[in-house]
Length: 102
Image 1 (cartoon, rainbow, N blue to C red):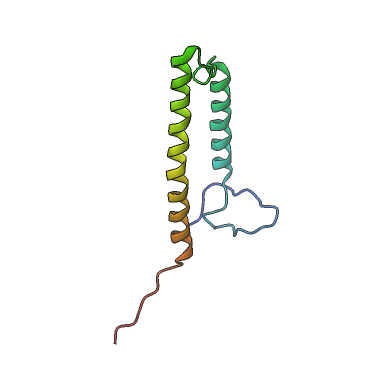
Image 2 (tube, helix red, strand yellow):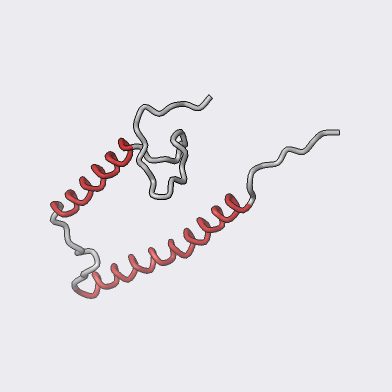
């Protein structure tokens, strides 16, 4: 028996999701995401922080900026292929199959 949601679902343009489908967005989820996004935008606008880290002054500051950028590039060179491999194995294997014992 399907569990009925207590929140109304948002109508999709192509109606891909059934009314009881868990993937269908509820109006509460949409409102929560909107409030969180708005809060993040307002907080970043009011923070008053600049990109001082990436605007170095002097030879030591330029060296620090170079090390920071190089470390981010090296990190991404490791993280991106690893993430892609994880998703490729997870999505490519399909559902597990049960073999019949004889």
